[in-house]
Amino acid sequence: MFRLKINKQEYHVDVTSDTPLLWVLRDTLGLTGTKFGCGKGLCGACTIHLNGVATRSCILPVAGLVDAEITTIEGLSKNSKHPLQQAWIENDVPQCGYCQSGQIMTAASLLAQNPHPDDKDIDTNMINICRCGTHSKIKKGIHRAVEIMSKQST
Image (cartoon, rainbow, N blue to C red; front, side, top):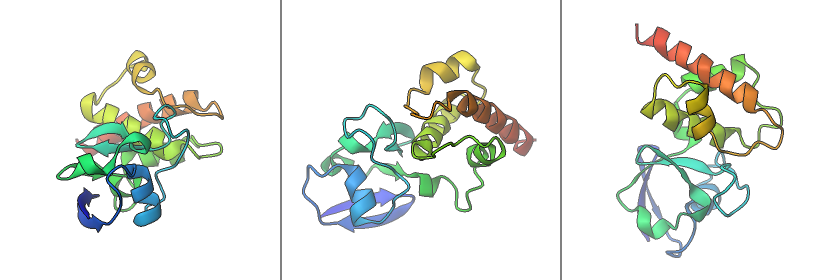
């Protein structure tokens, strides 16, 4: 039995110690916003925040997560009004949408570390794969989220 803190809520899960966090989230807890992509930590569809840092959940065994702060796309905002979620909607960023929760979580981690990234910062940090090729829309969405965040802080 493992005690996990996910989206500021405590859960007790009875899984084997090598179970990847992705499957605990999706299959055990029903938090299906985090997606399975490659299963090797390469594509980024499964990105969550671990202690505030964008992390691939498909290769993260649950045994090492006791006392960690885990945030999924469901925990990013109570009402889907996070500036990135607003910007994604305004700019019609997703095409198929499959990778977008991972994209948003990666972008949220970037903005937490660098609230005013330039294009180079975005290109360097946004390494998740989007098969639909919406990377230019993702970049535009990140810039729009920065604008929204700036207005909220004034």
